[in-house]
Amino acid sequence: MKPIHTPFDGGKSVNVLGIPMLIRVHGRDTSGSLSVVESHDVPGGGPPPHIHHREDETFQVLEGEYEFMVDGKTILARPGTTLFAPRGVAHTYRYLGKTPGRLMCVITPAGFEGFFEEINALGLQLPQDIPRVLEIAKNFGLE
Image 1 (cartoon, rainbow, N blue to C red):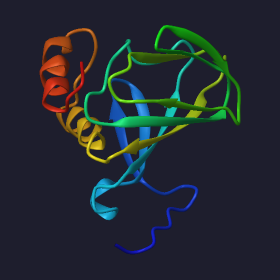
Image 2: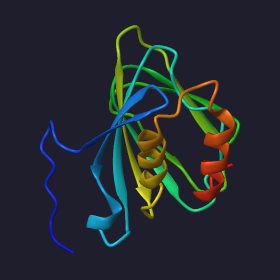
Image 3: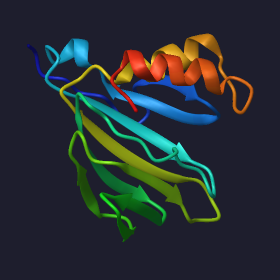
């Protein structure tokens, strides 16, 4: 494994169901130990409640204000807040701001960034592609 440097404007751009994201560090570059993804969230945006069965997620709020739900607890998260959502625990978030927010997520171990790449490559959209999204999610251990 080699050191990785991703500049401020670097990373692989993907669009995941209307949410612009950057894969800042890909798992293939860390021998699968972790990946880092940056989400650029729109007002009111965020994923539905879900459970990862293979990986833990550590979130760092970079810009804006978010409301997280982790293991049934609601947490208001402002810039600088760090949250850990272990595998097997239901979680979600919603962006509360009026201008786009930014959220960094460290995924351990790596691999789930492949879900984002697959959704992007297929150009899937909500709500019409929900059955296909759910099918792909199962392949990545996402419930």
